[in-house]
Image (tube, rainbow, N blue to C red; front, side, top):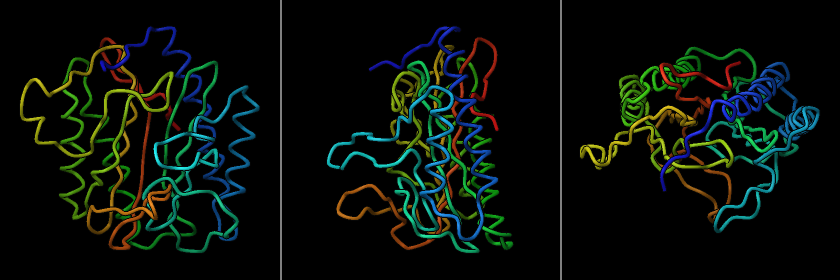
Length: 259
């Protein structure tokens, strides 16, 4: 299926949803502290989205073989890569927590994620967080109107692996707009098929994509428990996740979920 191309008016609506997502992440940043629970974070995000007349595209999300997702955010701690379910366990000093959330307003969706340190991070943690954030912005910098999508993938993979970390293969970025997951897929690594010109999708004006590197401190492999939601690193190492929704315009790239 070909990627959707959104009009200027539609991108304006996605931008409005993205602004609410950015506000949610700002609220979360202010909340993060030892003793806070991810369920509390989930409630604050749900209330903020509702205040702006929106709904969470995460809550009740259906995925083959899984129960409907039960939260407005994915709250992934330490070795949980993505799709962590909000709960009542308090955050602890030294935890890493990735929050992925979205807002659907007037039928259009913004999607973003950020990883936070609970308390002051040590040097090792700072380096991991910086690699994840830098990988996101390297991918965005590589996105050019009428450029190639795999340039984004290459920029992310190169930065992450040059710093001694690994990128997750099983979960990737994606188109977003009227649905949470649309074409095209946006891998964080260069696939073998990208060598062939026919398999090198072009970033066309009007495309809206979510770029989201998932960076593991150890190996790239991940596992799930009985195929259900939380995805963990196979070796128990920590993981970070950073994501922005961007729009491809005629002569530039715009981050629609900028905090």
